[in-house]
Length: 462
Image (cartoon, rainbow, N blue to C red; front, side, top):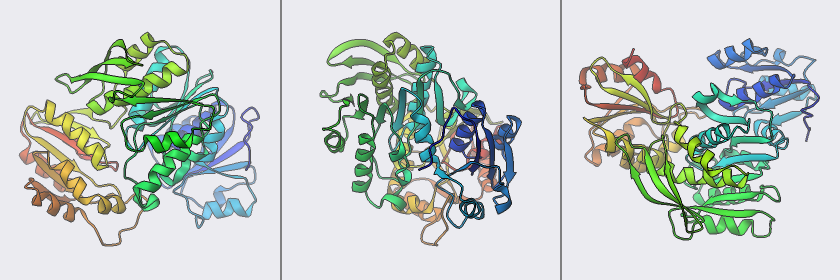
Protein backbone atom coordinates (compact mmCIF):
# COMPACT_ATOMS: atom_id res chain seq x y z
CA UNK A 1 0.00 0.00 0.00
CA UNK A 2 1.16 3.54 -0.80
CA UNK A 3 2.42 5.40 2.28
CA UNK A 4 1.72 9.10 2.54
CA UNK A 5 4.65 11.14 3.86
CA UNK A 6 2.85 13.87 5.77
CA UNK A 7 6.11 15.82 6.08
CA UNK A 8 6.58 15.90 2.31
CA UNK A 9 3.59 17.74 0.78
CA UNK A 10 2.42 16.46 -2.59
CA UNK A 11 -0.72 16.67 -4.72
CA UNK A 12 -3.64 14.66 -3.32
CA UNK A 13 -6.91 14.21 -5.20
CA UNK A 14 -10.14 13.29 -3.36
CA UNK A 15 -12.97 11.58 -5.26
CA UNK A 16 -16.07 12.55 -3.26
CA UNK A 17 -14.42 15.49 -1.51
CA UNK A 18 -17.73 17.01 -0.37
CA UNK A 19 -18.47 14.29 2.18
CA UNK A 20 -18.32 15.15 5.88
CA UNK A 21 -15.23 13.00 6.52
CA UNK A 22 -13.45 13.47 3.20
CA UNK A 23 -13.70 17.26 3.41
CA UNK A 24 -12.13 17.19 6.86
CA UNK A 25 -9.22 15.04 5.69
CA UNK A 26 -8.70 17.34 2.71
CA UNK A 27 -8.57 20.31 5.05
CA UNK A 28 -5.89 18.61 7.17
CA UNK A 29 -3.73 18.20 4.06
CA UNK A 30 -4.31 21.80 3.01
CA UNK A 31 -3.07 22.90 6.42
CA UNK A 32 -0.02 20.67 5.99
CA UNK A 33 0.92 22.40 2.75
CA UNK A 34 -0.35 19.78 0.30
CA UNK A 35 -1.90 20.65 -3.02
CA UNK A 36 -5.47 19.36 -2.82
CA UNK A 37 -7.94 18.80 -5.62
CA UNK A 38 -11.18 16.88 -5.60
CA UNK A 39 -14.56 16.25 -7.12
CA UNK A 40 -18.13 15.85 -5.99
CA UNK A 41 -21.45 15.37 -7.70
CA UNK A 42 -22.88 18.64 -6.45
CA UNK A 43 -21.76 22.00 -5.14
CA UNK A 44 -22.26 22.64 -1.41
CA UNK A 45 -21.17 24.87 1.44
CA UNK A 46 -18.46 22.30 2.12
CA UNK A 47 -17.01 22.41 -1.38
CA UNK A 48 -17.22 26.22 -1.37
CA UNK A 49 -15.32 26.33 1.92
CA UNK A 50 -12.61 24.02 0.59
CA UNK A 51 -12.30 26.14 -2.54
CA UNK A 52 -11.91 29.27 -0.42
CA UNK A 53 -9.13 27.49 1.50
CA UNK A 54 -7.20 26.76 -1.69
CA UNK A 55 -8.53 23.42 -2.92
CA UNK A 56 -9.22 22.80 -6.61
CA UNK A 57 -12.84 21.66 -6.79
CA UNK A 58 -14.55 19.97 -9.74
CA UNK A 59 -18.31 19.43 -9.81
CA UNK A 60 -18.99 16.16 -11.59
CA UNK A 61 -16.75 13.12 -11.72
CA UNK A 62 -15.13 12.76 -15.14
CA UNK A 63 -11.82 11.39 -16.38
CA UNK A 64 -10.41 14.83 -17.20
CA UNK A 65 -10.34 15.67 -13.46
CA UNK A 66 -7.40 13.26 -13.11
CA UNK A 67 -4.54 15.49 -14.19
CA UNK A 68 -0.92 14.51 -14.68
CA UNK A 69 0.33 16.40 -11.62
CA UNK A 70 -1.65 14.29 -9.11
CA UNK A 71 0.54 12.10 -6.84
CA UNK A 72 -2.10 9.96 -5.11
CA UNK A 73 -5.89 9.57 -4.92
CA UNK A 74 -8.22 9.16 -1.93
CA UNK A 75 -11.74 7.83 -2.57
CA UNK A 76 -14.86 7.16 -0.50
CA UNK A 77 -16.62 3.83 -0.03
CA UNK A 78 -19.45 5.20 -2.19
CA UNK A 79 -17.14 5.28 -5.24
CA UNK A 80 -17.34 2.09 -7.30
CA UNK A 81 -14.86 0.72 -9.78
CA UNK A 82 -17.00 1.78 -12.73
CA UNK A 83 -16.66 5.44 -11.70
CA UNK A 84 -15.12 7.30 -14.64
CA UNK A 85 -12.72 9.27 -12.46
CA UNK A 86 -11.66 6.18 -10.51
CA UNK A 87 -10.97 4.32 -13.77
CA UNK A 88 -8.89 7.22 -15.10
CA UNK A 89 -6.75 7.23 -11.94
CA UNK A 90 -6.19 3.47 -12.25
CA UNK A 91 -5.27 3.86 -15.92
CA UNK A 92 -2.62 6.43 -15.00
CA UNK A 93 -1.20 4.05 -12.40
CA UNK A 94 -1.81 6.45 -9.52
CA UNK A 95 -1.61 5.17 -5.93
CA UNK A 96 -5.16 4.67 -4.63
CA UNK A 97 -6.18 4.90 -0.98
CA UNK A 98 -9.65 4.41 0.45
CA UNK A 99 -10.80 7.03 2.93
CA UNK A 100 -10.29 4.53 5.77
CA UNK A 101 -6.78 3.61 4.63
CA UNK A 102 -5.81 7.27 4.47
CA UNK A 103 -7.34 8.04 7.87
CA UNK A 104 -5.51 5.06 9.34
CA UNK A 105 -2.20 6.41 8.06
CA UNK A 106 -3.00 9.86 9.40
CA UNK A 107 -3.74 8.36 12.81
CA UNK A 108 -0.23 6.88 12.95
CA UNK A 109 1.21 10.39 13.26
CA UNK A 110 -0.30 10.94 16.71
CA UNK A 111 0.77 9.27 19.95
CA UNK A 112 -2.58 9.73 21.69
CA UNK A 113 -5.06 8.76 18.98
CA UNK A 114 -8.60 7.89 20.09
CA UNK A 115 -11.05 6.14 17.75
CA UNK A 116 -14.73 6.11 18.77
CA UNK A 117 -16.67 3.13 17.43
CA UNK A 118 -20.15 1.75 18.06
CA UNK A 119 -23.41 1.28 16.21
CA UNK A 120 -24.83 4.37 17.94
CA UNK A 121 -23.45 7.46 19.63
CA UNK A 122 -20.16 7.93 17.78
CA UNK A 123 -20.62 11.59 16.89
CA UNK A 124 -21.88 12.65 20.32
CA UNK A 125 -19.12 10.76 22.14
CA UNK A 126 -16.49 12.19 19.78
CA UNK A 127 -17.98 15.61 20.60
CA UNK A 128 -17.51 14.83 24.30
CA UNK A 129 -13.89 13.80 23.74
CA UNK A 130 -13.32 16.96 21.70
CA UNK A 131 -14.66 19.25 24.42
CA UNK A 132 -12.63 17.43 27.06
CA UNK A 133 -9.40 17.72 25.07
CA UNK A 134 -10.02 21.38 24.30
CA UNK A 135 -10.89 22.15 27.92
CA UNK A 136 -7.64 20.46 28.97
CA UNK A 137 -5.68 22.67 26.51
CA UNK A 138 -4.22 19.71 24.63
CA UNK A 139 -4.53 21.43 21.20
CA UNK A 140 -6.01 18.30 19.58
CA UNK A 141 -6.67 17.39 15.98
CA UNK A 142 -10.34 16.44 15.62
CA UNK A 143 -12.21 14.67 12.82
CA UNK A 144 -15.92 14.26 13.53
CA UNK A 145 -18.91 13.09 11.50
CA UNK A 146 -21.02 16.16 12.29
CA UNK A 147 -20.77 19.91 12.59
CA UNK A 148 -19.45 20.95 16.00
CA UNK A 149 -19.91 24.59 17.05
CA UNK A 150 -16.84 24.69 19.31
CA UNK A 151 -14.54 24.03 16.33
CA UNK A 152 -16.70 25.78 13.74
CA UNK A 153 -17.19 22.69 11.59
CA UNK A 154 -16.23 19.03 11.39
CA UNK A 155 -12.44 19.35 11.55
CA UNK A 156 -9.83 20.97 13.78
CA UNK A 157 -6.14 20.86 12.99
CA UNK A 158 -3.99 20.96 16.14
CA UNK A 159 -0.25 20.80 16.67
CA UNK A 160 -0.07 18.27 19.50
CA UNK A 161 0.04 14.47 19.79
CA UNK A 162 -3.71 14.27 20.56
CA UNK A 163 -6.12 13.10 17.88
CA UNK A 164 -9.75 11.97 18.09
CA UNK A 165 -11.94 10.60 15.33
CA UNK A 166 -15.03 8.52 14.70
CA UNK A 167 -14.55 4.93 13.57
CA UNK A 168 -17.36 3.72 11.32
CA UNK A 169 -18.02 -0.01 11.07
CA UNK A 170 -19.68 0.05 7.63
CA UNK A 171 -17.70 -2.11 5.13
CA UNK A 172 -15.25 -2.78 8.01
CA UNK A 173 -13.50 0.47 7.17
CA UNK A 174 -12.33 0.96 10.76
CA UNK A 175 -10.19 -2.17 10.48
CA UNK A 176 -7.66 0.10 8.73
CA UNK A 177 -7.17 2.11 11.94
CA UNK A 178 -4.47 1.62 14.59
CA UNK A 179 -5.65 3.74 17.55
CA UNK A 180 -3.90 4.16 20.88
CA UNK A 181 -7.33 4.06 22.54
CA UNK A 182 -10.22 2.19 20.94
CA UNK A 183 -13.75 2.85 22.21
CA UNK A 184 -16.67 0.49 21.53
CA UNK A 185 -19.90 2.10 22.70
CA UNK A 186 -22.36 -0.63 21.69
CA UNK A 187 -23.04 -3.38 19.16
CA UNK A 188 -26.43 -3.48 17.44
CA UNK A 189 -28.08 -4.67 14.23
CA UNK A 190 -27.38 -2.17 11.45
CA UNK A 191 -25.90 -2.00 7.94
CA UNK A 192 -27.39 -5.43 7.25
CA UNK A 193 -26.93 -4.82 3.52
CA UNK A 194 -23.24 -5.44 4.26
CA UNK A 195 -23.05 -7.47 7.50
CA UNK A 196 -26.11 -9.72 6.93
CA UNK A 197 -26.52 -10.60 10.64
CA UNK A 198 -25.64 -9.54 14.19
CA UNK A 199 -23.01 -12.28 14.51
CA UNK A 200 -20.98 -10.72 11.71
CA UNK A 201 -21.38 -7.28 13.28
CA UNK A 202 -20.11 -8.51 16.66
CA UNK A 203 -17.16 -10.26 14.97
CA UNK A 204 -16.34 -7.03 13.13
CA UNK A 205 -16.18 -5.04 16.37
CA UNK A 206 -14.02 -7.77 17.94
CA UNK A 207 -11.59 -7.44 15.03
CA UNK A 208 -11.56 -3.66 15.44
CA UNK A 209 -10.59 -4.16 19.09
CA UNK A 210 -7.51 -6.12 18.00
CA UNK A 211 -6.28 -3.14 15.97
CA UNK A 212 -5.51 -1.21 19.18
CA UNK A 213 -1.76 -0.57 19.33
CA UNK A 214 0.40 -2.34 21.91
CA UNK A 215 0.52 -0.37 25.14
CA UNK A 216 -2.83 1.24 24.42
CA UNK A 217 -6.30 0.61 25.79
CA UNK A 218 -9.66 -0.82 24.75
CA UNK A 219 -12.63 0.96 26.35
CA UNK A 220 -15.72 -1.21 25.91
CA UNK A 221 -19.33 -1.19 27.10
CA UNK A 222 -19.53 -3.77 29.87
CA UNK A 223 -23.34 -4.05 29.83
CA UNK A 224 -23.81 -5.65 26.41
CA UNK A 225 -23.95 -9.33 25.46
CA UNK A 226 -20.91 -9.10 23.17
CA UNK A 227 -18.42 -7.77 25.71
CA UNK A 228 -17.00 -11.21 26.46
CA UNK A 229 -16.44 -11.96 22.76
CA UNK A 230 -14.65 -8.64 22.28
CA UNK A 231 -12.46 -9.06 25.36
CA UNK A 232 -11.59 -12.61 24.33
CA UNK A 233 -10.32 -11.31 20.98
CA UNK A 234 -7.68 -9.12 22.68
CA UNK A 235 -6.70 -11.39 25.58
CA UNK A 236 -3.22 -12.02 24.13
CA UNK A 237 -2.51 -8.39 23.28
CA UNK A 238 -0.52 -6.02 25.48
CA UNK A 239 -3.36 -3.56 25.96
CA UNK A 240 -5.40 -2.46 28.95
CA UNK A 241 -9.09 -3.37 28.83
CA UNK A 242 -11.51 -0.97 30.53
CA UNK A 243 -15.25 -1.58 30.91
CA UNK A 244 -17.95 1.03 31.47
CA UNK A 245 -21.69 0.95 32.11
CA UNK A 246 -24.20 0.59 34.91
CA UNK A 247 -23.35 -2.99 35.89
CA UNK A 248 -21.50 -3.61 39.15
CA UNK A 249 -18.64 -5.35 37.33
CA UNK A 250 -17.83 -2.28 35.21
CA UNK A 251 -14.66 -0.38 36.10
CA UNK A 252 -16.38 2.93 35.23
CA UNK A 253 -19.94 3.00 36.51
CA UNK A 254 -22.78 5.52 36.44
CA UNK A 255 -25.11 5.37 39.44
CA UNK A 256 -28.22 7.38 40.31
CA UNK A 257 -28.81 8.72 36.78
CA UNK A 258 -31.41 11.51 36.76
CA UNK A 259 -32.72 13.82 34.02
CA UNK A 260 -33.51 17.50 34.44
CA UNK A 261 -36.48 19.24 32.80
CA UNK A 262 -34.54 19.55 29.53
CA UNK A 263 -33.77 15.83 29.51
CA UNK A 264 -30.10 16.32 30.40
CA UNK A 265 -28.62 13.68 32.70
CA UNK A 266 -26.46 13.82 35.80
CA UNK A 267 -25.09 10.88 37.77
CA UNK A 268 -22.59 9.76 40.38
CA UNK A 269 -19.34 8.47 38.87
CA UNK A 270 -17.73 5.41 40.39
CA UNK A 271 -14.30 4.14 39.31
CA UNK A 272 -13.32 0.72 40.66
CA UNK A 273 -16.12 1.11 43.20
CA UNK A 274 -14.87 4.47 44.48
CA UNK A 275 -17.17 7.50 44.44
CA UNK A 276 -15.64 10.19 42.18
CA UNK A 277 -18.43 12.75 42.53
CA UNK A 278 -21.18 14.05 40.30
CA UNK A 279 -21.03 14.33 36.51
CA UNK A 280 -23.45 16.80 34.87
CA UNK A 281 -24.08 16.74 31.12
CA UNK A 282 -25.52 19.24 28.66
CA UNK A 283 -26.55 16.62 26.11
CA UNK A 284 -29.85 14.73 26.28
CA UNK A 285 -30.77 11.25 27.42
CA UNK A 286 -29.71 8.47 29.75
CA UNK A 287 -27.88 6.78 26.88
CA UNK A 288 -25.50 9.73 26.75
CA UNK A 289 -24.72 9.29 30.44
CA UNK A 290 -23.37 5.87 29.46
CA UNK A 291 -21.52 7.30 26.46
CA UNK A 292 -19.88 9.90 28.70
CA UNK A 293 -18.36 7.11 30.80
CA UNK A 294 -16.42 5.97 27.73
CA UNK A 295 -15.15 9.52 27.18
CA UNK A 296 -14.10 9.77 30.83
CA UNK A 297 -12.27 6.43 30.74
CA UNK A 298 -10.41 7.26 27.51
CA UNK A 299 -9.50 10.76 28.72
CA UNK A 300 -8.10 9.54 32.03
CA UNK A 301 -6.09 6.86 30.21
CA UNK A 302 -4.36 9.46 28.03
CA UNK A 303 -3.44 11.46 31.11
CA UNK A 304 -6.09 14.16 31.40
CA UNK A 305 -7.30 15.48 34.75
CA UNK A 306 -10.76 14.50 36.05
CA UNK A 307 -11.61 18.14 36.84
CA UNK A 308 -10.89 19.14 33.23
CA UNK A 309 -12.88 16.14 32.03
CA UNK A 310 -15.99 17.05 34.04
CA UNK A 311 -15.82 20.67 32.90
CA UNK A 312 -15.42 19.61 29.29
CA UNK A 313 -18.46 17.35 29.53
CA UNK A 314 -20.55 20.11 31.08
CA UNK A 315 -19.57 22.42 28.21
CA UNK A 316 -20.37 19.82 25.56
CA UNK A 317 -23.60 20.39 23.68
CA UNK A 318 -24.52 17.90 20.98
CA UNK A 319 -23.18 18.21 17.47
CA UNK A 320 -25.53 19.50 14.80
CA UNK A 321 -28.58 17.28 14.16
CA UNK A 322 -28.38 15.48 17.51
CA UNK A 323 -31.65 16.45 19.25
CA UNK A 324 -30.82 19.99 18.18
CA UNK A 325 -33.26 22.81 18.98
CA UNK A 326 -33.83 24.77 15.75
CA UNK A 327 -36.41 27.38 16.78
CA UNK A 328 -40.15 27.98 16.95
CA UNK A 329 -42.84 28.02 14.29
CA UNK A 330 -45.19 30.94 13.78
CA UNK A 331 -47.74 29.07 15.91
CA UNK A 332 -45.19 28.75 18.75
CA UNK A 333 -44.38 25.05 18.40
CA UNK A 334 -40.80 24.05 19.25
CA UNK A 335 -38.82 22.48 16.40
CA UNK A 336 -35.96 20.02 16.96
CA UNK A 337 -33.87 18.02 14.53
CA UNK A 338 -32.37 14.60 15.17
CA UNK A 339 -30.12 12.44 12.99
CA UNK A 340 -31.57 9.23 14.47
CA UNK A 341 -32.07 6.66 11.70
CA UNK A 342 -32.04 3.33 13.58
CA UNK A 343 -34.80 2.07 15.90
CA UNK A 344 -32.51 2.09 18.95
CA UNK A 345 -31.55 5.71 18.31
CA UNK A 346 -35.16 6.72 17.69
CA UNK A 347 -36.29 5.04 20.91
CA UNK A 348 -33.65 6.96 22.88
CA UNK A 349 -34.73 10.28 21.35
CA UNK A 350 -38.41 9.50 21.94
CA UNK A 351 -37.71 8.82 25.61
CA UNK A 352 -36.10 12.24 26.01
CA UNK A 353 -38.79 14.03 23.99
CA UNK A 354 -41.67 12.48 25.88
CA UNK A 355 -40.02 13.45 29.16
CA UNK A 356 -39.74 17.14 28.28
CA UNK A 357 -42.67 17.86 25.92
CA UNK A 358 -45.36 20.36 26.98
CA UNK A 359 -47.95 19.55 24.33
CA UNK A 360 -48.19 16.89 21.63
CA UNK A 361 -45.06 15.26 20.20
CA UNK A 362 -44.93 15.27 16.41
CA UNK A 363 -42.28 13.37 14.44
CA UNK A 364 -41.62 13.93 10.74
CA UNK A 365 -39.58 10.86 9.85
CA UNK A 366 -37.59 10.11 6.72
CA UNK A 367 -36.36 6.49 6.66
CA UNK A 368 -32.74 6.09 5.55
CA UNK A 369 -32.02 3.38 2.93
CA UNK A 370 -34.38 0.67 1.71
CA UNK A 371 -32.36 -2.18 3.23
CA UNK A 372 -32.44 -0.68 6.73
CA UNK A 373 -36.16 0.12 6.50
CA UNK A 374 -36.98 -3.40 5.35
CA UNK A 375 -34.79 -5.10 7.96
CA UNK A 376 -36.19 -3.09 10.90
CA UNK A 377 -39.72 -2.25 9.75
CA UNK A 378 -41.54 -3.46 12.88
CA UNK A 379 -38.82 -2.07 15.18
CA UNK A 380 -39.13 1.34 13.52
CA UNK A 381 -42.87 1.25 14.13
CA UNK A 382 -42.40 0.30 17.78
CA UNK A 383 -39.92 3.12 18.37
CA UNK A 384 -41.96 5.78 16.57
CA UNK A 385 -45.29 4.72 18.11
CA UNK A 386 -44.47 6.57 21.34
CA UNK A 387 -44.97 9.89 19.49
CA UNK A 388 -48.42 11.43 19.47
CA UNK A 389 -48.34 11.95 15.69
CA UNK A 390 -46.00 10.55 13.02
CA UNK A 391 -45.70 11.96 9.50
CA UNK A 392 -43.71 9.88 7.01
CA UNK A 393 -41.60 11.04 4.10
CA UNK A 394 -40.39 8.82 1.28
CA UNK A 395 -37.30 6.71 1.96
CA UNK A 396 -33.97 8.45 1.46
CA UNK A 397 -32.13 6.14 -0.95
CA UNK A 398 -28.54 7.21 -0.18
CA UNK A 399 -26.31 4.59 -1.87
CA UNK A 400 -29.17 2.22 -2.80
CA UNK A 401 -31.66 1.66 -5.59
CA UNK A 402 -35.37 1.09 -4.99
CA UNK A 403 -36.20 -2.56 -5.66
CA UNK A 404 -39.89 -2.01 -4.95
CA UNK A 405 -40.06 -4.30 -1.91
CA UNK A 406 -40.49 -1.66 0.81
CA UNK A 407 -41.80 1.88 1.15
CA UNK A 408 -42.79 4.39 3.81
CA UNK A 409 -46.39 3.34 3.21
CA UNK A 410 -45.46 -0.03 4.73
CA UNK A 411 -44.20 1.76 7.81
CA UNK A 412 -47.47 3.70 8.06
CA UNK A 413 -49.34 0.38 8.03
CA UNK A 414 -47.12 -1.06 10.78
CA UNK A 415 -47.67 2.03 12.94
CA UNK A 416 -51.43 1.87 12.50
CA UNK A 417 -51.40 -1.77 13.62
CA UNK A 418 -49.97 -0.47 16.90
CA UNK A 419 -52.74 2.12 17.18
CA UNK A 420 -50.44 5.04 16.39
CA UNK A 421 -51.56 8.22 14.64
CA UNK A 422 -49.43 7.86 11.50
CA UNK A 423 -49.76 9.41 8.06
CA UNK A 424 -47.65 8.82 4.96
CA UNK A 425 -47.38 12.07 2.99
CA UNK A 426 -44.26 11.39 0.91
CA UNK A 427 -42.91 14.75 -0.21
CA UNK A 428 -41.64 17.51 2.05
CA UNK A 429 -44.03 20.22 0.88
CA UNK A 430 -47.04 18.08 1.84
CA UNK A 431 -45.54 17.48 5.27
CA UNK A 432 -44.85 21.20 5.74
CA UNK A 433 -48.38 22.18 4.76
CA UNK A 434 -49.91 19.58 7.06
CA UNK A 435 -47.81 20.76 9.99
CA UNK A 436 -48.66 24.42 9.36
CA UNK A 437 -52.32 23.56 9.74
CA UNK A 438 -52.01 21.26 12.76
CA UNK A 439 -49.13 22.31 15.03
CA UNK A 440 -50.19 24.07 18.23
CA UNK A 441 -48.17 26.48 20.33
CA UNK A 442 -47.10 23.99 23.03
CA UNK A 443 -46.34 21.15 20.63
CA UNK A 444 -42.90 19.73 19.90
CA UNK A 445 -41.85 18.73 16.38
CA UNK A 446 -38.81 16.55 15.69
CA UNK A 447 -37.62 16.17 12.11
CA UNK A 448 -35.85 12.83 12.19
CA UNK A 449 -33.57 10.87 9.89
CA UNK A 450 -30.10 10.89 8.32
CA UNK A 451 -31.29 12.36 5.03
CA UNK A 452 -32.43 15.94 4.35
CA UNK A 453 -35.65 15.94 6.39
CA UNK A 454 -34.20 18.79 8.49
CA UNK A 455 -35.18 21.17 5.67
CA UNK A 456 -38.84 20.72 6.68
CA UNK A 457 -38.19 22.21 10.11
CA UNK A 458 -36.14 25.06 8.66
CA UNK A 459 -39.00 25.99 6.34
CA UNK A 460 -41.45 26.04 9.26
CA UNK A 461 -39.36 28.40 11.40
CA UNK A 462 -38.44 30.84 8.64
